[in-house]
Image (cartoon, rainbow, N blue to C red; front, side):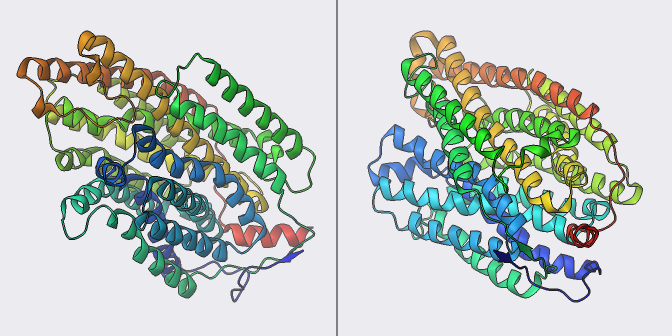
Length: 517
């Protein structure tokens, strides 16, 4: 089999900054819609499920289906990026996202909506993996920090704007919830056109390669089984039950078979050899811990703002801005300093330290905590995440052969998403149990990980006060659990060995490696 990528004049000539920024415009637009897909429905879900006549379990699956598809397909997209045209793959993932979005917006029942969300998630998985892979192919590691602020800005805007846009669309009578899905379509189509015009990647020819579809199937099935378990446990069935045991056993068996297959095929989806690289192994562990702590800890902040502090959904979204501001500023400043000095480990350590401190501070909140104080704590947390999350990818990409850039990058994204999924599910169960315990006879007001926040206006004043206190204390407990996980991430990054950043892009390094062979 022979595969090619689009040629570019001067194989050894790095792209100039203007060309990089032009190409990034399409990539970042694609990344924006991928992030938006996961956040825009959060405030709209109660209306969507009510309109389509769905149940509480369907409420869960509308979120879970997209997340499962995105997380489990990331390694496959990464492997495809090592073999085929990265430009065509990005455009293909955007095309899948468009199909899934249109089908979601046109859904007439919940079954069609969930199936469409799977397609949307597959496209989003491609964008999650491929954007960073293509960036590494275009930009030398030494220069990647210069563009970290752009990535951080897109991440921030997509995360904050999603719930706000979703709530606004639902509340606008002449638009409605279907536009929560339609809104990403023009962005996706524009990104496809921009990439066609601006993205020029060096020609790569590979022979005798094939995709390990059996390994991909086993990995997807195994991870999906375990994710279904952690997503529904404590809600549809008990954590300790026959159903839990069956799902865990089945998932582990499938993953064991996947490892066996991956160790024997010529072109595995996830080359097990990359885990012999100390940097890859440590950054994977750190990324998973960051995912568990960050997404598991912060996803419930909006509920805390609404229930404990009494803010509206729109205001709750805006109150997340301090954390996003910290993330954006720290990632931009750290990126510029890394480009200037070539030193990066100090920012990993500082980021993990600030993240741990931020979680520790947020573990002290309750229903009476000043919003100004909470904002300050969120700035600390966001600053730590901004220095840590993207630079873990930089450290990994700098330390692998160019031919494995796709696999290495996608493995990090996969474990971060996996950690986030596990964190949201497990900590959601912790929150539900703590709220139910604190409220005692009023346990029916618990929110859990997937239920909507209780309607505080419908509760008597004395009951509303108890609910506010219960949610405040439970949210603080989630951050208390996240704190040691962040501290463990700090320990892990301390052991990552700092290596000089390479000054050639992934495409140039691949050309050099092939010429040596």
